[in-house]
Length: 199
Length: 199
Image (cartoon, rainbow over all chains, first blue to last red; front, side):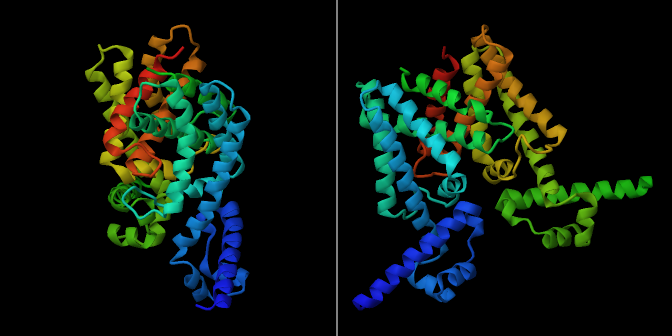
């Protein structure tokens, strides 16, 4: 591939991600149609598949951006309270997660609407991003539990993240089984204070 | 409507629910097509809409069955340990929830794939079913926290259910952010023992 061709492909790739991001922000994954995307990007439908393996590849690229923004938000918020006790830092992170989800409901949901299991070939950059996010959750947990091994802390990180995710998910969707929106924050805090400091 | 017409409609309704249930069990909501359902039930496509307002009405009826089975499973399991301390009863219920979700993955997911928010007209029988399930979770919580008001216990019930749901959801989907399948049970127990007995 000549340099010019590579540049053109790269530009088309970025343009498609920009367009898809706006559509997913407004309508979720269901709002993506190859034909519309091609029209908006000024390319042939087939050209999409020259720069992405399939629509999932495009969605993953948008999700990658969302995930990096989420990671950045959470990191920045926790950096502001770097000197606070570990539990406060966990609460700060969980609240940042809630705010991000509330402000980007469809982009956030799209992160979980793509199948992405431990049995699949998940892109390495995505796993790295997840590792980074989990390591900032694990740090205060390790301070609270200096006796626990790294794998125990990892498990606790996952259980804690999943719990907060469940409360945010059912709560923000205003599901009949969820925590009322106005109480999500206090319930996240309640759960975190008790799990994080658990024996 | 004559009695005979009513009976015929009722029979078609039941037949459609039976057929839809099998399809949703195997392929989730996405596997439902009005044309296929009509062919399998031996009726015209339009006849479906004589007995259900729309496809969501049919899905809700299947979900109702699933939800009642779930409620029955959880109630039976907890009845077996009626004399156990409150935390043990909560752990028993959460494990029954996990087992039900693991054994009925698509039917269970379908419960959450239908929009069902507090802003909508959710059928009264569905809310009753939810109320029943939540009251059996609330009972041991109220024993553990005799000082808390009914609305505080309700909030705790929701936070606790959401947390367990999050762990089960991300875990069973084997998501890269979830708790590994073999550890879901122990993490549910860990979370419950700490939240449920919290101050």
